[in-house]
Length: 239
Image (cartoon, rainbow, N blue to C red):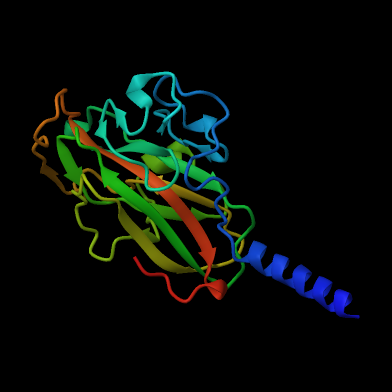
C-alpha cells in the first residue's frame, strides 16, 4: 500500500513539474544542430526560426567562426546569461541600412483561455553597436507571423517594457517580462521591433574603452533565456 501511494505521488509530481515548465523548447539556444560558421544560422537552434528574409544570428562557444563565438565575437565581448549560447538580432539601424531581424518559436503546447502566463526574455546591447533602441517586444499569436505581416507594421506586441524605454546596458543582461492572459489557442512567440521608424527611439552609444573594431551602424541586441511559464506554478512574474 505504501509503495502504491508513493507511486501515485510520483506520478502527480511528475505531471505537475511538466505542466509548470518552460513552454519554450530551447529558451537559451543551447541545442544547436549544426556548428555555427556564419551569420543567419538561427534555424540551426532547435525550435527557432526567423520569419523575415534577414535571419537572426546564433552565437556559440563551439562555433566554427570566431565572429559568432561566445563570449567574444564580431559584436563585442558578452558572456551568456545561461549556458554557452545566445541569439542576436538587429532592432534598429541608421536610415534602415540593415534590415531588422526577428526570432520566432513555437510553444510546446497551446495556451489555455483565461490562463495567466509569465512571458520573459533577457536582452543586452552589443558592445560594438553605435546606437541603442526601444521597441523591443514579444508578440504572441495562434499562427506564426509572416514577413508580409511584419512589413505591414500593424503588429502590437503584448510583451514590452512598461515605459518602452531605450535599452542601453552593455555589461549586464536586462529582463523584459510581463504577465499575459491568454485568449486561448496561442502557440507562437515572435521577438523583435514591430514599431514604425518614426515610433522607434534611438540614442548614440560610445564605444567602450579598450574595444577595437568598427561599430555596427545600428542597435544590435543579444537575446538569452526566453521563457513562457504558466503562472499557476509561480509566485510572481517579476523582472
